[in-house]
Image 1 (cartoon, rainbow, N blue to C red):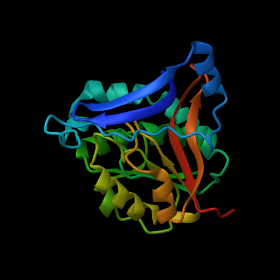
Image 2 (image 1 turned 60 degrees about the vertical axis):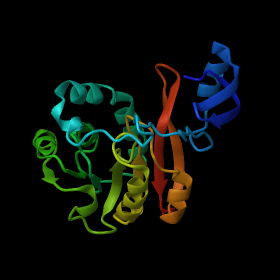
Image 3 (image 1 turned 45 degrees about the vertical axis):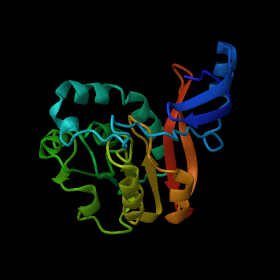
Length: 238
């Protein structure tokens, strides 16, 4: 939701105060409908903090023990799955390799596999329970921490990163892990980055450090005229 046009902000002991000019509904809709996927970016500069003032990270196991949360997240992913398909159909070819190093229930990969049945889908997750669910949707799934998966550098045509996000891990770890995982991408490969919570990275800086180009920064939800974080990165090869 857009409250208005940003004018400035102030930080003090009580937190952050934002100043803006209120926008009418028609103005907000025009902003959404006119958003350019490459020129428009959604930024979340302030992390969620715990009571001690530290960056909040969800307790280990929270994501795979709460079935209500899991099913709700899957249901809320519909627009992310649709947008991913619309992007992927422009560059995936038969035999392409798609890898999600935090595949969760496998619902995202499973939906893509129905669109692209001649591609190879690989999923991993550090949770055994999650890999058991994912194995019902995709043929190759294994248990591994994202930073230690047995995947060769340069072998992945589409790398799906939907866990470098707030509440999932600290910002410093997310940055280092992104650089490491970006090495998996083939010369003509792409990276999708998105999530249910804000991305932790300064994507422009991270892409530059990994020798990647930003190809788009947002997705558009046509049913609600809304926009959301969804980055596509590539190496620039054709």
